[in-house]
Image (cartoon, rainbow, N blue to C red; front, side, top):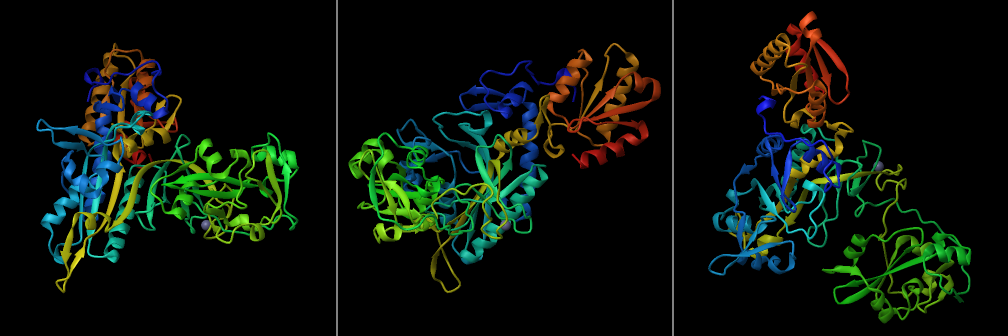
Length: 569
Ligand SMILES: [Zn+2]
């Protein structure tokens, strides 16, 4: 490929609309252009990267017995009504009508479509298990599309669905996908972790998210530094070894005036107590009812863990008005003593013996609160707090480390959720009708490309891992005016093409500075400079984009040398 003819519109300046580094660099380096909010065109450079990611995914899915098919993007509402998701999916579902006024949506996911296919075609246990997948555009009408390819309204995903006879079969399919995903992200050259994630009310116990580690990641990953232990979870799910810490000595419960004292910090300063001696209370609306969550003042409530304890569809923070209505006090003065609504207290709370809590009377707190003595016996104790960095690993006790990550894949056990709702049954060996047991497994393809940039860049541009780089090598003649340089550049370009490398030559009539800057910006792993030294000494200078190291090769060493180098990048 010749850059003089290549459609690669680079920008000199950082585009104003771009908020994150992958968005900035992919725009600047001529990989993507915005067509509408959250909708992008993938230019030739991006298309090469995406095809490589997809090829790796296909190979790993096929290796585990996956069979590729293509499901429709346009999905009839009837199927979504069967599962109830037409109404509960929310405004993110792109809905539309055809000319006969029939409802459709643009698929954000394909459980309905594929369950419909399988229920009509699969009859017997002999046809199971099945692993079916596709790579295709998906649609979500995001309220605020942002961060470029990170949160678009149209994006490319690989989605695989597994169909098994029973939960043991599902476990096998799940493990296959865990292995496939590990291989995919390893082969893409990305640093990642597979973390335990919250499955919510529907998913049962196990789900894993695959997180590409990057400082700009929106999610926090807690992991054990001991590779033999391997514990890793996202922050919503992360647990710690519970070590009861008894704080204070029992005293009389007393009401004290705390005028205009609201936050935990203010209470601690006003009453001269440590934050961990204060009980922090948060009121949630859980479907039609309320629940009060209580953690130590030095901790934070984990909303996901609370929701799992309450078993409700929607859990949200109560408004200040609702707090007043339900507890009769302003937010800064509420507490668990004497309330009639359900209370869930964190495991640590039980051991705070001389605690401070809101008195449910604006401007007052209780001191000397003893949870076992003063809480209603109906109070439920459970792990409902966020884990903090440095707390002990729940498996081995070593101090947990936090890192930021970008979710690029998730594997999930659906069990019989969809097959029961949609009537996807099979006949077992004894002629018994049973629901097909399902799993679903997604990889964000365009998101993986963006995450790769978030993880691999410097101030000059992108640094592609060789496995997913648009090209492996760029040949740069320093001066187009120098006939000898151009001749030798063309020679080495053809030599490398014939040797099977993915190589591009920068034959544009530009100053060397411009060519070098563009090569760095696009992020091609290896750059071969053909300049005076090549002409005079017959050697080729190879610059490694990632380390900025320069190596010098004789012509006859070049092919092997480049092959070796690429293996390390
Ligand atoms: Zn551990």
